[in-house]
Image (cartoon, rainbow, N blue to C red; front, top):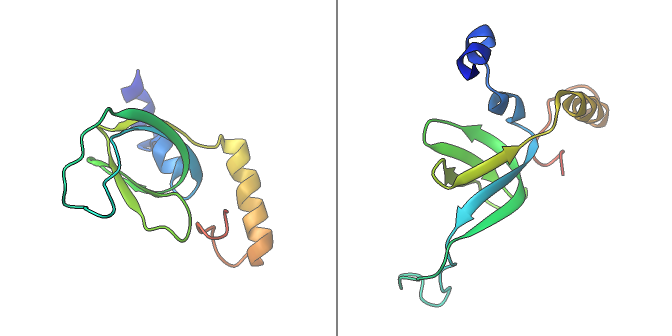
Length: 114
């Protein structure tokens, strides 16, 4: 049944969410020791849910960022458990608001969607 949706429009729900803030649940391991970044770190994985600005996606995973002043990160599909983006009616509202703020000149950016 999922194939039917894709063949009708050749568009995925993820393509609708690129350029918007989404919630992503992903698996993560322990953080590196900042004083010894080359030292291996062992620990239990945990599921984390956070909001991200979805910049892109592809066959290997997604590219997203947590804030405008933080670099884009890559999350592989193997680590992604769940992605929830805004429904169509909310995207319309966001786009209208961004158009008002930019004077109707440019599309939304991560900086304008904070």
